Length: 406
Image 1 (cartoon, rainbow, N blue to C red):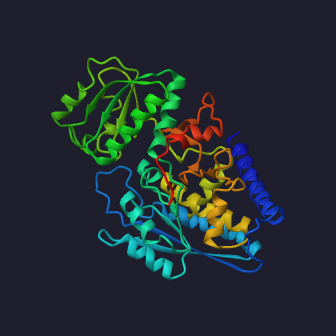
Image 2: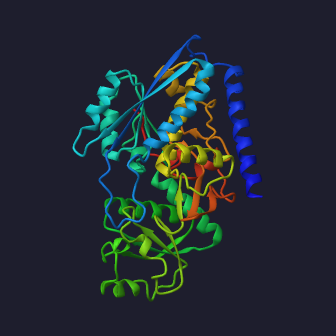
């Protein structure tokens, strides 16, 4: 039965690829399309070099996280591009700890790169966007989840493929609302990202009618990284005693304690948030909608499973390829206009076409809810509707957005 499902997924993926090619060849071309001929598409990729993993980390981050996804995306673009006389090239830049991201971005632009995919933190992303302002370069944020980048710090030359924290917490809270697990116990770590995730979770809880009945900071150190028991664990064991709640929510983007919480709560409760039941753009257990084909190709190319950052970089590169195919040219201004036009749709193994929001350049996309080894659900949940698209029920909607693109 499993073999039949995988075979059906591969047949579907192959048919979808053929359909995309036929569509590209026969659908009407936008008025701003270039004349027929060879099209050279130079894509840049920027990331910061990861520190070597500590010896006790069970699942260390791959040194090519994100970059491996961009490479597979480029291969996918080139497969269709050969038929359409499109030539794709990927320029890879891995920044050292103190190296200027803005300077590196300018050098890439001077070398002819017109589309730049980055997996950089928020401050680097803003610096890159500002350094490239006024130049013919479109920047794709494939890594930073900060809501401010889609709000007060938004930039007109940046398109966000990574989901925002608001989208991630909305996706999770929608599922909790459907399950009627309405009383939340929130534990927040000390890192800045932990606090930002907790703030997003509170907004999501208010948005969908859930209640945070208790909130406590984590003050017991990185127990999830400990290699042996210690006396302080006894204090953590009683940390949750005396509170009536439905589900524990952890805000631990650093991974210091979130994996320690399950089975250490005083009462037998479920755990969700940044660990336990999580919301993510991708998961290695995702095999629906033809995704098994992408998972297999990535595994062959990278010799490991695809992670969310890989998927986001792959999606960014594929979005470039789709826009270039449909506009029949690599003009950055034409591609940027097409990305937010009603004609842009990206097939990305999520069951529905993905598109960019006009008001903050965020990619609309379903988000996967998963435990470590299995998918649990997909948000938006069917019970939540929206006047424009159910996908816009995830994240900051246009009336509430503080983004003023410029």
